[in-house]
Length: 150
Length: 73
Image 1 (cartoon, each protein chain N blue to C red):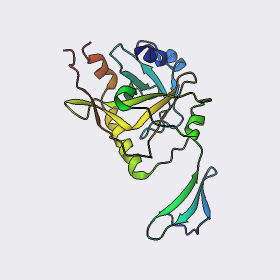
Image 2: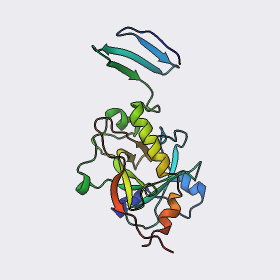
Image 3: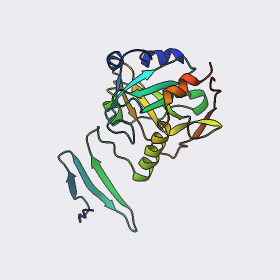
Image 4: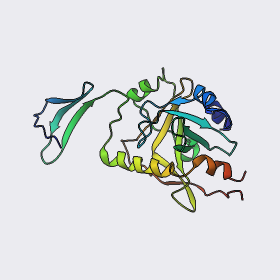
């Protein structure tokens, strides 16, 4: 799983120009942040969690983790329109990630299963895909809150 | 709020690139729309979109990178 994170990540200590070179373009932005379309993925070696930070507004940052098929079953189907937006060709699947929320619950880091993020790693394109076909938990208990270093 | 009357099969435009067509009016209170919009414009049911907006704001409201760096390995 970690090797996938290295595929998408930029260096945490890289300057903004380097990050921009490895950034992902989100044509629709993220829900609530439509103007933020360029994100760097910063991996700092903490398990399967990666930070997706806006290049234009660094205080907007999300924590993401890869979709866990063993735990959640197969990832959602993706529509042809979304595939075209991500420039996915043939049957190539996107790389699915979940948006984590470490701030909403004192005991748990939660994951938004209703609106995962789909990435085309090769084309550096991404999209938050709101699942309209079914109701999924927005605050799924993903993992207990880890200990924070002093 | 602008109010427009349309019959089944009729459309209206929002700007140059968004077209909304009334497809079906069911007995009771349901209306089916067809929406044509550029892929850059996400189209969702309001109640779901508002929930996702709120959750995204909550997820990104703290300093996510600091949180991640502070996690004990």
